[in-house]
Amino acid sequence: MKLHILSGGAAQGAVGALAPRFKAETGYEIAGSFGAVGAMKEKLLAGEPADFVILTRKLIDELVASGEIEPDTCADLGRVRTGIAVKQGAPIPDVSGVEGLRAALLAADSIYFPDPQRATAGIHFAKVLAALGLQGEIGSRLRPFPNGATAMREMARAAQARPLGCTQITEILNTPGVTLVAPLPAEFELATVYCAGVCRGAAAPEAARRFVALLTGENSRELREQAGFELPA
Image (cartoon, rainbow, N blue to C red):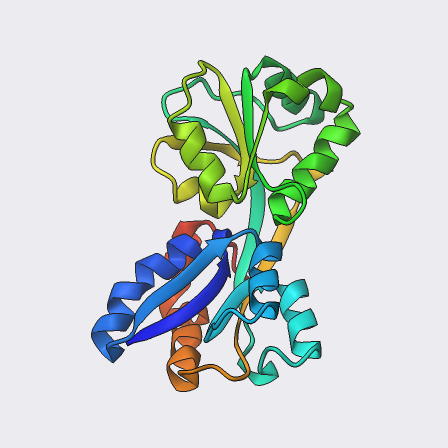
């Protein structure tokens, strides 16, 4: 038996960590897609089968309003900041302020980030580059990928000596071979709340409700925090 999910990449680590336990308890295996939230919403609206979704709270609210998500099933996983990463073992730049971030970007020989059209972090990072006035100067070094997880995997095996990455902190922490430097400086901070909801017309609605409850409940609080989610006290 399979429980089908469409999810933003920010939640992949937490879902993957809970999946074996859920299968042992219920017999359901978690299957589906992880990627840019905009792309996942498009898949759902195009008719791709899904029992539940994990997207930004804004997109979940839109899907509730359009009748795609059961409103009484929605629950937050927590808040995720967007951060800067380097390859494991590389020097850690100071990106605590705007000028430090600018210097780190100028020093990088390649810059890895998610889709600037459909990924939460990618859209925001494109705005950061525009605010810094760096798009033209470093344009040839930009390496966009469909989602943050892919961007980080590619950065981990990059041949360049000084690659830099930007995506959701959960995706950085879930990728071997890369190191989290820090969240973006306060002037460019992005903190996104992720939310889960069961799809109207789900093939396995009760199992989906059970997994959402497990993923967003107190029993998984420590796991989510370790994965990079920030939860209220």
